[in-house]
Length: 213
Image (cartoon, rainbow, N blue to C red):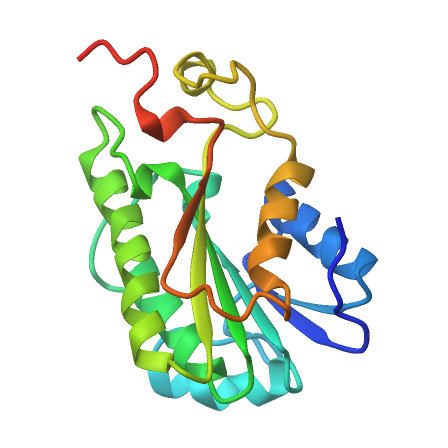
């Protein structure tokens, strides 16, 4: 799958994992130039310690990107920060979106499907991801009509927890390229009338297949 992205720049934040790299590869194949940021706050990298820092650091990170893809750390870990000394992930997503809103035409958040249907036994993690889903909708209202904001809520990928796979009608994990294809749909400049949408790409896990409750 390809979109029309020749000559355009896409910024991917926290995209070091397999899903972020698959999205980067798909955008590159569509002609986009990829800029990756880890949000470390180091010189030349995005600083998400506050809204002011994010706005100040944004111009040095990417020059007029058409797209911001922000990948949740929850794709790789369910660990939560032990205290409130640093901005939450929800804050960091909001800081990045608002910092790049004057430049981009579209924002895609990539979050776990636990943001749509909570994981049993992991209330804090599920609530945090649900916050990102709600933030996506709120930013879609706030940044309209100039920026469309959507999210991908993804399930099992590659060698993910088999409990997720067993509760999916498709009975398999996704390949990273399958997630990237969904990201391309939301990133496509031709997709001009979708905003505030959280698209589940989880093999049907969130519809409740084979739940024992």
